[in-house]
Length: 243
Image (cartoon, rainbow, N blue to C red; front, side, top):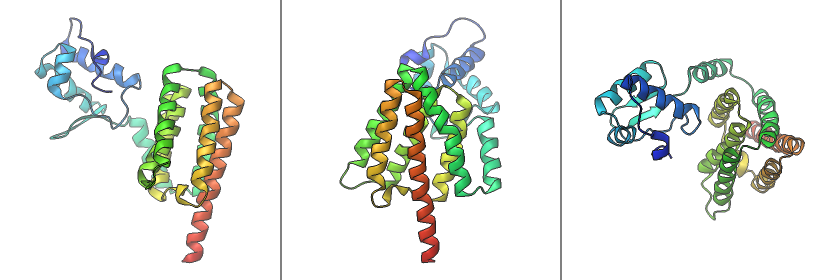
């Protein structure tokens, strides 16, 4: 995706390094590149932009100094988390929020996001939701399920929904929330019966989004989060009882 030539059309005349930096920021702002995504290799990106590699390096150094990208020697250039995301992550980690508080926040973020996504009907973003759903369903149907990968795909499906709502602050906030939840516990999808319930709940959410029904999307998102909350709390209680 990051190597799509349409993203990196040749630059017009002007201050070359500034134009390069501006173009990269435009691509990041369009949500075609997300935090953690790798930019095309230097030679390839310079060719697509129609500029020299020294000018590209200068632009990347400037973007690194501003906190927009990370330059990892031997690995490449990656989109960095926005400063607001880093600050939010540090604040939430410092608070040591309870599981109940984290799921409360999921409801605050994801219910309106599902409704907005259904209302906005952004074709490209809904297509990404569908793609994430299809990938998740395929992984969940494998004979030997990779539970860690399934947890990541489940989070990606919900992230695509929030992105379809069109509010970048919501997207950043949910990303941090998912990260904290993933750190604190293994996926609840391994609990007997939970995977099957989750599959049906995800299908209802997608159907509501595609049909453009905000109320149904909100209800479906609520039912799904409540189901995940109950499973997560049960796992914690069972673990405490076993201890």
